[in-house]
Amino acid sequence: MQRLRPADIENYYASLKVAPPTVDLHHTVIHSSLQRAVKHQLVIRNVAVGVERPRQVKDPEETIVQAWSADEVRKFLKAARAVGPMAAALYALAVDSGMRKAELCGLKWSDVDLAAAKIRIARQLTKMGAEPEWGPLKAGFRRTITIATPTVALLRAHRKHQAEIKMKNRSVYADHDLVFAKEWPHLTRRWMTLGHPLQMNNIGQREYAGLIKTAGLRPIRFHDLRHTCATLLLQAGQPIHVVSERLGHAKVATTMEIYAHVLPTQQKDAAAALGGLLYGR
Image: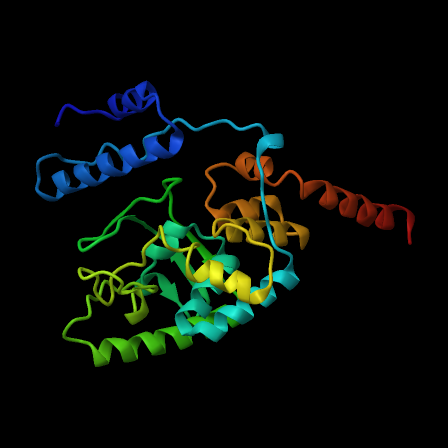
């Protein structure tokens, strides 16, 4: 294990005949194992940090992106607020930040600066269950983003509500400092405990699907809330590199490929703006 080098891991990933998401799973296991080895002083450093994983190249025309309009988002978030403080904060932050599902499930209060309206995205949930685990982000680097003032207000209300649950159930609450953790309605199995991470496989199927139905909206996947965030930002004229950083893409080219359908509108607006400057209105 001490002779292991980054190139050895990269060669291993290249030899796998599986889809990129499965390679990511292998990486998570290897990274976590080596991290424990470092902790127990079996190796000096975790050589899996920064290792490149093969990525699936998609034809931009084959990339299907679904997104809601701003009006549809407002209807959805109104339905979420009616459910309770955590639902209101969870779905608002999902759209506002563009965070991945696993990143939302791994977010801790220590990563949240409500006074500055900033979120530090530093980890993702990699294992659910009675002994949850967290691992590195998909793109391998951490990022800090600024969120909207109304989202901050919803997070404040949720934190207050969560604190009340902790106080009333302090003898059984498993406090992992998670922003979004199991509450009483989420305890559907005997081993589940207050404070444990939300079930990633259930997000987007139960409560989320019900909210869409209540709001009377066309159904989109939970992951499409991330696409909605990016699409609305680009339509509002935000620079592509700013959107790319917010989403945590390793390369701006990835963002351009996925959201190419939004960019022509920006080019038209840019041409009109430049024409106004050059020739007058």
